[in-house]
Image (cartoon, rainbow, N blue to C red; front, top):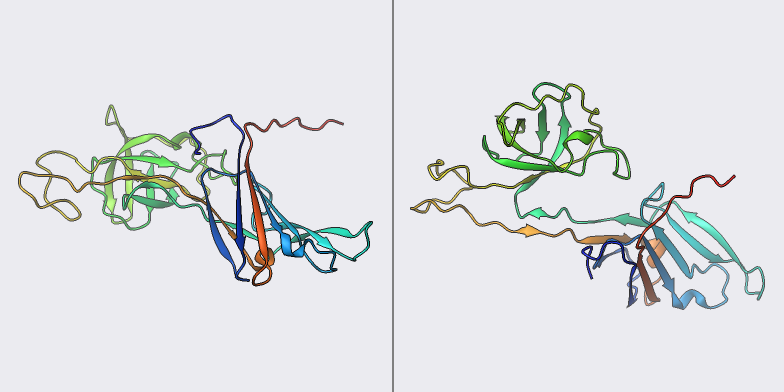
Length: 254
C-alpha cells in the first residue's frame, strides 16, 4: 500500500518482541493513528501500560497517550496518562533525489528572493523545487507562495542563491510573500545545465558529456517508539496502524 490510494482508509498490523529499548518502525503509508498494544502488560497487574497511542498532528508529537493499570480489580482498574518524554518521535526520511536535496535555513522576503541552505554544490541556472513550506505544515513555516514551485537559481555563495522564474528568467519578487519561519527543503531537478557545462565535480568527466545519474527516493514513513512505549525486554506487542480516508473538522458544536 502507498499514498497513491488517497481518499481510502488503510490499515496494517505488526507483531514483535521488545528489546526494552527505543526502536524505529517503518510503515507502507503515512499513518494518522498508531496503537501499540503490549500484550504482556494486559495482565491485571497494577503499573502496567498495555496501550500507547500516537496521533499524527497532535499538539506535542513526542508524547504518548497511555492507558495504565492502576489496580487488579475488574472495575475502574484503568487510568490514562500523557507520557511527555520517551514517547514517540516522527522519523520520516527526506525523500527526493538521492544526494540532490538540501535543507533551507532562511528565505528573504525581498526582490529577488534569496534562499540560504545547507552546504550543497548548486550551479547557476539549475532548476530546483522548494517543498515543505507554507501554513499547511503541522507548524506553519511561512513562504506559502514558494511551496512546491519550480525555479531557476543564481548562485550567490556556497550556501545562498536567488530565484528566477523558470519560464521567463525574471527574478522572483518576494517583497509581499509570507515571512519565512523555519524548515523547508530544496530538491534539485536538473543535473544538466547544457551539453557544454564545465566538467566540475559532482558532474561526470566522461566524453561526450554524460551527467551523473540520480534517482528519486520516496519518503519512508517512520515512527520511533521510546522506552516508555517499548517498556520491558521480551514484552510481546501488536501494533495497529491506521490511515483515514478523510478527516472532517466539524468545528465547535456548541
